[in-house]
Length: 304
Ligand code: HH2
Image 1 (cartoon, protein in one colour):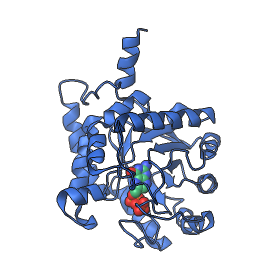
Image 2 (spheres, rainbow, N blue to C red; image 1 turned 180 degrees about the horizontal axis):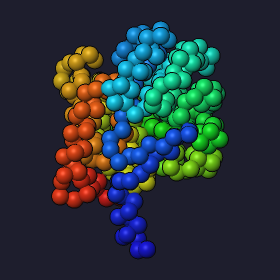
Image 3 (spheres, rainbow, N blue to C red; image 1 turned 135 degrees about the vertical axis):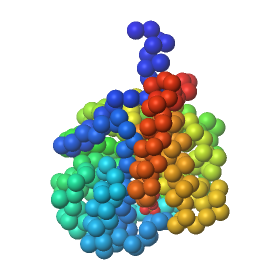
Image 4 (tube, rainbow, N blue to C red; image 1 turned 90 degrees about the horizontal axis):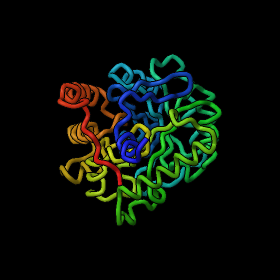
């Protein structure tokens, strides 16, 4: 195979890709949604709303009914400036919710950077692990994913939530994000994860400027050079608030616009709070793209 052909393959989105999770797999032939469930007292959105396990479980079922393909449960806020939560406190928040969700109709991912929390969550039925540190905090988290055959989301973040917005300048943002995620993929595979378990995420809002977030959404398809499906999480984030001058509870339209644009650029998975609205918008956008002249998806710019 020529180098040109390799580059061409590497830069096309994995159209018929499948994301392998524990005991299930998700066909990525259409946009897939992760419904956000924060069981935290201090998230930037929904803070405290689902701290009660009963309310959290109800919300998980409601999001599944609204069209979520996965429910992403987080017990530690990663908003800018947030402090880390000890593992035991994180588990005390997560365990009663996971225990109530054995009959959920869609798989669960757990949003954690801690290997021990990931291990316990998988034992209680989680199918995927969403690591916003891309294995920088606890690389052993990949061992848990490998052993369990769980899905693994590797997200780019510069530094840590407490300080990540202190320096948001990059000489080449896309290149830096791509190489960091490339290193994380190598580490995950070295620890035994199959490529089909791994999804990558540029980390919208995690150590990025307003323009950086916009650039990442516009050029997210360039991450297809990594050969893994791409997830984005722009939902209700502050860059939308800054663009529109709107508070967190009025950012649904901005979220939808960001998701639709990322879909056209090559993203396949979307982490959103407002599942019903995102489901409707992305299904329409996907149908339009599929009716288009080429394969139906905008070809991402070849990665350098
Ligand atoms: N964003 C947040 C948390 N986890 N995971 C991935 N993969 N991608 C993201 O963009 C992402 C994420 C932050 O949003 P949220 O969970 O709503 O807020 P908080 O961290 O304050 O709980």
